[in-house]
Image (cartoon, rainbow, N blue to C red; front, side):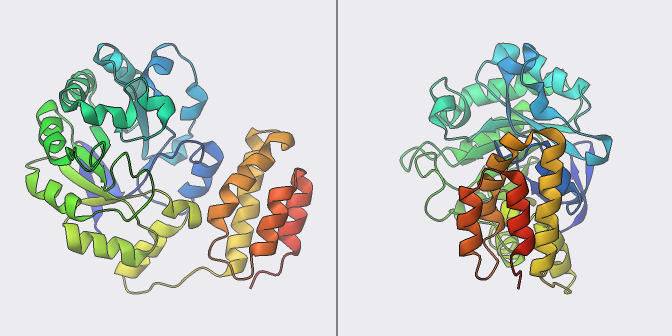
Length: 322
């Protein structure tokens, strides 16, 4: 496969086969609002626990507006007895697709056998996916890592189990849980999973920061689509870059464009949060968003030390963007 338009996952037809990942504490409502201005395809909200869903807690994580479609929700948990109820709630909220997280390496989640801990029990993944798939009409997908560590690579096994359980797509983050986010993603395992798949779509994930990276992943793995994660923190418009690249008209955004959209993102944050909390989000995103700007070190240092959002905006406005 390569970049394509009119991409189908189950009964869902998407504008393209570029997917923006769910990233806890990053892809909140303000950032999704910014992403949607540049990305035509599927965007995911932050993940939410199954237990929180069925108890009607933390639902603010799933806030979206109609213009944000196509929109996906990702759930995390290890209890097949509530998986169907959680999936049905997502469907009733109007989401287009639901994903099961089987890859988050956070100790807070793996200690209750959720996230990447599920990689140690592939049959449990199958049971959860089966319960979700039979409960809803929207497509059910899963996101995994290769395995818990180098000695327990289970990705290919899970491809077959998820397919049997009714999952329409599986995203492979080509690292183990033990790797975390270090080292290179091992794309050769995505290729192996693609060869193992019969009807289930295989989505490649890991180390996608440029259109060239996306092109190379398609060529090397033959995956059906790609999921961009940290790359969209640096460039919210990365999927536009990909589309332009494959149309042979790629041109990088200039620094002023980046400045304008950083200010816009701050405004979106302030629509949802008070000034005292907004600066935390700016500090969090700036390490990614400002990476591609020349002579940016001094501005980044200033932003890390300022807690007044008005002063943050002033520093951004006065910085010489070139």
